[in-house]
Length: 116
Image (cartoon, rainbow, N blue to C red):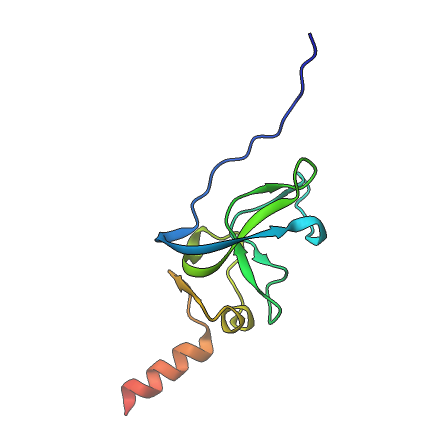
């Protein structure tokens, strides 16, 4: 009898609620971690102005590079491997990020509004 070894990944729920729209995405061009896994919550294709979505589930690139990206919905930023940049947040207009750390620019803007 022959056995086959498969990677197992922990299920991480990055969603803040059950309202989202996901579309299939070929993650072949995305760089995986040293363990060959692209983590759920990764900004796709890059954490910047080119962002098109957030990876919904871990993808073991070697076994199956296909994943699902969230293009509309509510994401808990604390569950993401890396917090999205301001450019990525601007590019992802249909995604709301909860539990996100405000930038110093946003904090200064809020304090200016409070002083008026």
